[in-house]
Length: 163
Image (cartoon, rainbow, N blue to C red; front, side, top):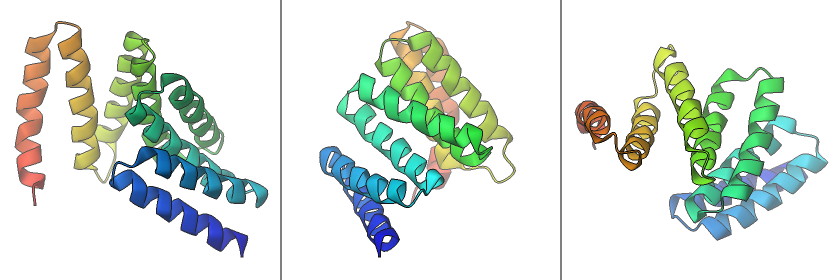
């Protein structure tokens, strides 16, 4: 059963990603992607692309991260899948920053934050992750006062979310 194998590889990739074993995760996601592509499971292929993009961001490979993030964004845009588009756009924003296109990346991340903050069922862990990334960028731009304000605000939320 190819879809079963695809799902298994996807879950293996997720496990490796959680363990920060990004190269192994990419291999598993690429296997899953191949099976999903053969089955013409468009959304599942894009889910793999998004996760591959995340791994490449973590490995510092801006070019590959951009390629896979853009593929995921394109599919989710075409599918009008706003929730998945938001998460894929987060990866795209991080990849843009990594590639040196800091202003475009910051703009993308701010759009993602607006969408996440306006969502009905707020994903506070995701919102905190976006805000943290924005604060990191602001620090590198010498805007430490703005970054510190964001960090102060998200500390209150992060404290509530702690186990």
